[in-house]
Amino acid sequence: MSSTEARTTPEWTTAAIGGPPLALVYQHAEGPRLRGTLAGYFVVAAAISIGVLALVGRFGLGDLCTGIALLPGVALGYSLSHRAARWVDRGFTRHAVLLVSALAALALVIRALA
Image 1: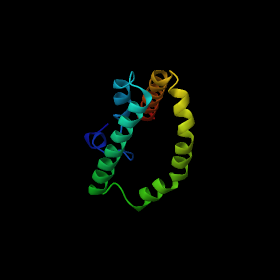
Image 2: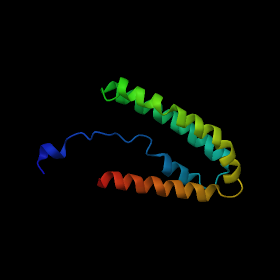
Image 3: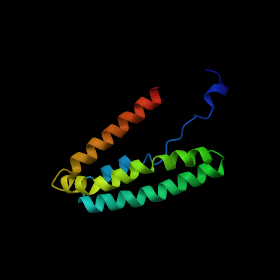
């Protein structure tokens, strides 16, 4: 690999990668506190990521359209979250945090190797 190839910018950007580590820090917290903390973190992290990507020319109309296309899934997830939260709050919060964090780590490794 030449030095030019080593410095090329990837075609994708990973944002909010700090979510799983933060969730692990709060893995023993009660569900409402964990969800509230992560929600606040992701709102701020997403706003900063989008702002910086826009400033460097890596966020445009196509990305905005993709985000809008994902809104039905967001709405569905939000509508189902109340049921899932009741189930997770019955003592499964830590297990859910560990499972989601492990899956996120696995996805990141697979993406990096692809």
